[in-house]
Image 1 (tube, helix red, strand yellow):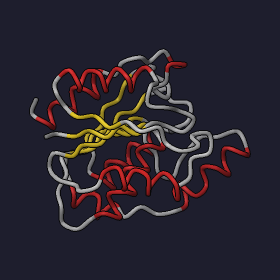
Image 2: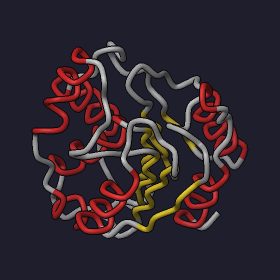
Image 3: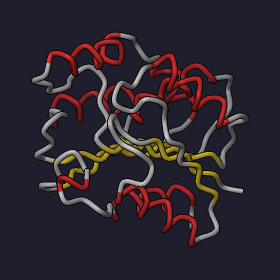
Length: 192
């Protein structure tokens, strides 16, 4: 059975309109979707988010897929890098993901982001688990600098890039309630 884990963003939740829409579309196809509420989303921490997701995932296989939004992408990549044992997974959809570049004006937000930005991810281990990585960006994301981050996803993960126009950080506040490109990319990966 195909399983899709959907991991929400910083200050987000699994019932944000875009993620809820994606979950419901997949469930209509009979796909198992696990979309947890991550702990303390206002202050996401590697030491709580990564073990929680790793525990939910359990055994990885080719029928395991991931969709992450913003810091949710980081969480997924860290789980996969730690779990790497030669197992292959189905694929990863990154929505507004980031590694080392983030536009933050608030000092408190910069402190929260610092561990995520400074703690390295073993990209080789992630790439060894799947060649199905699609990274979706918006050309007007207020937090994720498009050009630098796009290049990092291409270079570090061999990701296929989808660039959306005027979708902000893909939140309801940006007017995003659906993301057909994410669903289409995931359906293509799964062959459904």
